[in-house]
Image 1 (cartoon, helix red, strand yellow):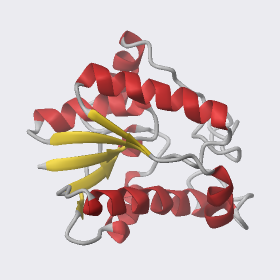
Image 2 (tube, helix red, strand yellow; image 1 turned 120 degrees about the vertical axis):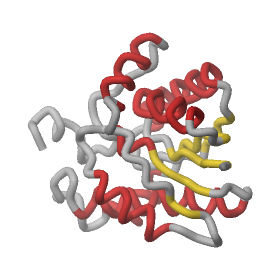
Image 3 (spheres, rainbow, N blue to C red; image 1 turned 90 degrees about the horizontal axis):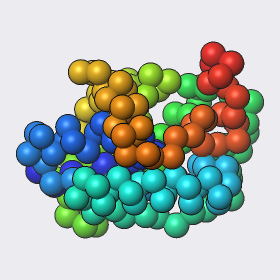
Image 4 (cartoon, rainbow, N blue to C red; image 1 turned 45 degrees about the vertical axis):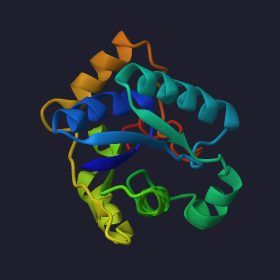
Length: 182
C-alpha cells in the first residue's frame, strides 16, 4: 500500500517509518507544519526530517511554511486553550486535511500521522481528525505508533541518528505546557 506519513518531527517519525515499511507499505514522509512558531524552528525540524528520509530510503515532501495562515485558521480565538484541547484538535484537522488532499492528488492509498507516537497526544483525537479528513477514496490509517514501545524506539533511533529533538509541540502556545505537565 502507498502510504503518506504526516510527520510532526523526525524523532517521532523515526519509529513510524520502519514500522510502516515492515508492514509492506511504500512510505512517503509529508512535512506540513505551519503550526511551528518560527521559521528557524521549522527549518531545524525540516532538516531533521530530510536526514531521516535519506537514512530510511523514503521520499520527503515539504509544504511551504505559512504560520500566519495557521494562526488565522487554527489558533484565532483558541489561544488560551490547554494542550490537548480544542486548538490541538483543530490543528490536527488542519494538518491532516493538507495530508489527505496531497495524498488524493498524488494517488496514495492511505495517509496517517507520526503524532500518535507521542505520549503527549491522545490517539483517539488524532484518529477522529484523520477520519474527518478522508477524501476521494484515500483512507486514514489508524496506526497507534505508541504501541509496541513506539515512543521508546523513537527516542533510541533519534539519538542514534543524531536527529534534532525539540522540547515543545511546535506552536507558541505549547511552549512550556508539556514541561508543566499539561
